[in-house]
Image (cartoon, rainbow, N blue to C red):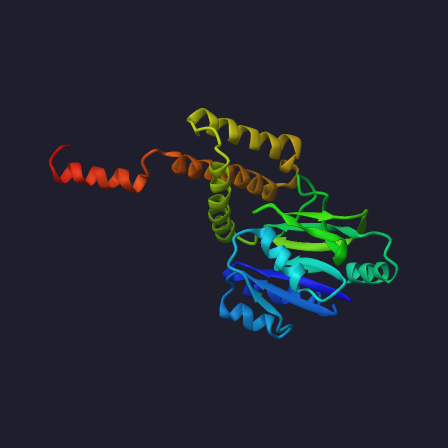
Length: 267
């Protein structure tokens, strides 16, 4: 029995979650871990399953572990709302699970960024462990970049899992704002060294080198340049927010003190 565990998170997911659900409607069970989807999104979900479990956690691994806890199948497939299981991958999984040789499987994810299939960069090829024998999946860890722990060998499936992400600049910005907050807080909790102007330049230069020299994002054309530069910008935002957290006096307090000085005619 295969359980698909799907996650809802962003308000705009109602625009494309039905395609994700349609691509796995053949599964024995679909459960959804809801982390704040709007009513329209949940109405779409209910056309495919009534097994919806709310989670207020900002910890990705906790939501993944909740999915395992609620799943009834002996095999688990984890899926995001912007991912789709291709017909050929469905056939490959169904055939493999009749006589599985491994305890878990990596899937070959094919990414589409800004409408173009990715063929270069750090996301190509993109293999992710997403299919697990439930009793061999020991759990997930990592607040943002979750990692699975599997007791046994991991195989690979080769037919595509499609990932239709980075759909427009607005949602890219919204996700950067959200994730940068979590990333900055994690670094702050781990006592990251103080952010200075030279550290900001070094971080951006390093990320630029990674994207454009090491992974050759420029070969992807205009979309590759946009994505690569946006990733540099995203790292910049993470460290600006970290700088803000590291201030001895919060900015809000600084501005209150400026107001006091203005009203007292001290400046």
